[in-house]
Image (cartoon, rainbow, N blue to C red):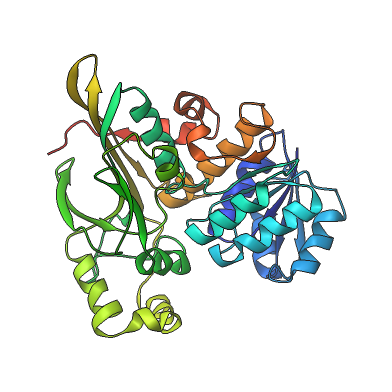
Length: 372
């Protein structure tokens, strides 16, 4: 399969390596930064099926020309910042390509869903960790119940060694981080669809002997509210952080007013908060309901750690995000997903995902046995 991969950042470079070295994909990596393209190409094995192409990814016409030209790509895989998702999906529709992305933005997803109506090709956004894998897990667990009462989804991408007052380091896109902290959060409460406030709904829990907090953030549910409407009492998603993070973020966003000056906040975070490759991803899903006449709860809990390989180190967020979208593309290539139209994450079967060569990254994580 021929792939046009948009974005040569941390996630894009991991996706490019996985696909270009698999033997089943020819990848053209497209980015506006020639230095980023050169870094990815230099780190790639000599036999990798990778080409690079410098294009202004914010220029819709130039991007469309690039996708249509050259190798004639069949599929666009978008690893650009969330605000370019609609642009990339529009290019895919115009070029007659299949489309996959990582966006967590609710508005972008709804726009892509509209683009997919009547399309002869497939459109599958939200293929990362959350939204993405977390929704696949939650849907799989909930589908095993006769009736479902509560679905709780919790995900955290956390520094392994927090040292600052926010107890956080940059592990992924600052744009995506602030976006999920500042927009309304979809949920189902008492059987009704609601939009909750971000950073609210604070809760505390311990997992594997470590204390955490969790609170509402936007986008992590994907399309589950639509899929489970009328069939569940409570369904929500919260981001996991170390205790104290939410209080300090509310001070920055609300008390200092930086929610209305997000570019300033992003600049502060990029300048003052170091990035880290030493992170851990926490995935925690609980579903309760009736099963064979009994009220029971099922739990899926895992921790995925960074790969500290000397020649090719990968952060946990790189591993989990790239695994999600690569597994989705691979399952689609194998004919295990619909061939056209809008594809929801919950249409992926969890056993098939975990058995996939890319999805197996989640199988190799450490399952957490004790929850309090």
